[in-house]
Length: 96
View 1 (cartoon, rainbow, N blue to C red):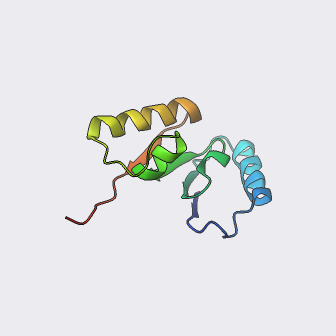
View 2 (cartoon, rainbow, N blue to C red):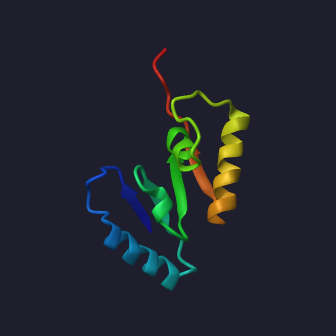
């Protein structure tokens, strides 16, 4: 199941996220992937797909910084340590 939340004021209210979390808990053998731009920390038990900026924000790190590949790997490891799930990080290409 893939869940996508890209707009802060979208349909993913706190109540709906809690219902989604209950569904994730009810079906532990189902893979849930969440691409949540604004509240990824609210989704429990799901694999997160974040860009590097979102990952940095998730960890309380500066998000307007260019991270080296090894630093991005560290962000991913830290998020996995917190969520106990794999994480997918994407890099945003900036204009040259």
